[in-house]
Image (cartoon, rainbow, N blue to C red; front, side, top):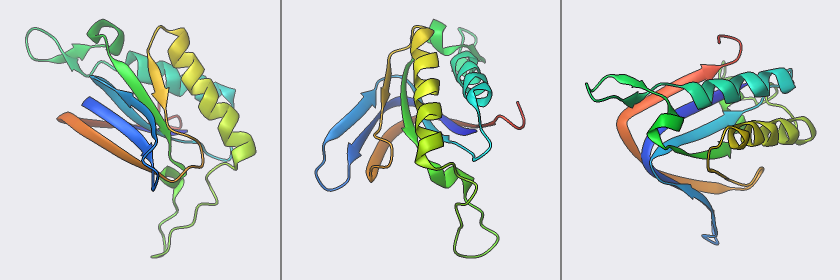
Length: 149
């Protein structure tokens, strides 16, 4: 499983075309989440734990040392199958991205794991064509991959 975690002042996701607002957050994390064909609940739990414990908010000394719970962070989690793109050719292939029957339950598990830790979590809509807007803070963007953490 992969997650691109961006520290934001605010973020939102809407449906392309209609403009329907699906989710938004204030200060916190915009998380783009990609599920691999081999991922299981173990990877979902691991990445949720990493997201919820990522100490990238500044303390009183200006050092990134504060976790999202202590910072009062909100989360906006959006599914992003393109994180598993195989770009060896000029036209990306997405065969490593999990199919919806596997990906949706794992995506939802990550969301529930974050909520169970007390976070306010909003989301996009799986499989929807969406537009994401964010005001990045820092900017600070971290790539998490369960094969490496």
